[in-house]
Length: 172
Image (cartoon, rainbow, N blue to C red; front, side):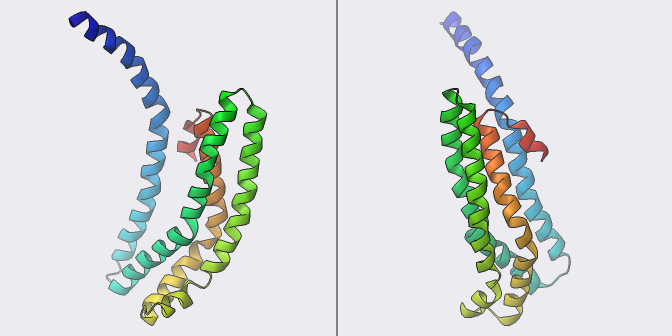
């Protein structure tokens, strides 16, 4: 029993190290991405204005639901396509998938931006008070220029993870 346990440990230890080597950059990148939103909330909370804090939360929710989640979801297909292409030794095809995903990302981000330009009016239609709707709309409009770049970043990150090169993602 002792020798089979040692044999199992000898097999799983390299697998665990490889898994850690591949996973840590993605974990770090995800933590940093969440930290930026948390820092924004801490910064706004320092103004001691409950309407402003609520407006930032409302704006962040709107841009995540009607914008950034579309980019992440759209580019998640890239994981499968690039993994299959790369596994089959078709690096050129994997690159073509990346280029197509980047083009589609730009094309999808533009309608998202146009829709989110009217976030304030949408919030007013939903019955949000005028001050919160205006502040949330201002917050959303202030972050809209980053949307195409976030979509492109998601495509590039998916590509790099699929070809087992996650480290550059952690440094971007």
